[in-house]
Image 1 (cartoon, rainbow, N blue to C red):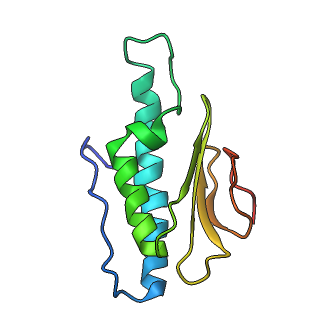
Image 2 (cartoon, helix red, strand yellow):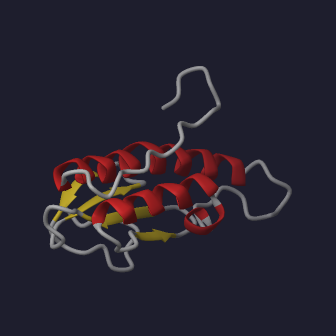
Amino acid sequence: ICPASSATAAPITPAPYVKSGMNDIYIQDQLSSTIKYEAQTYYSATGNNSTAIGNTYIGLCTKSTWVAKALAVAQTANGGTMPTCNTSVTAYAVSSPLSTDPTKFYCVDSKGFDGKISTPLGTSTVCPTR
């Protein structure tokens, strides 16, 4: 969370030659920091607009520029697989395969989960626990 500032840090783009362990750190950083912060900002902002929708996470994956950039960075870091980003009115979940082991994933969700999982997210808006 950005203390006293409304500015969001720009996603860091990993160099393709960086060791894969570092790429996992990029993935974790993008999901744990950028996605979670932007999700809360997006949710709050949708409740303050002139539409009748009210607060929602719907559109987070496609309408937030910062989320799109973070997903692209995670995709580069994991070797080319687009992270899964699912939303509903009241929930979201985002996961990306890890570069060191593409059968493992890093996942964050609106329920507070932030960690590694071994089951793909699929279409859920809640990260499967470990």
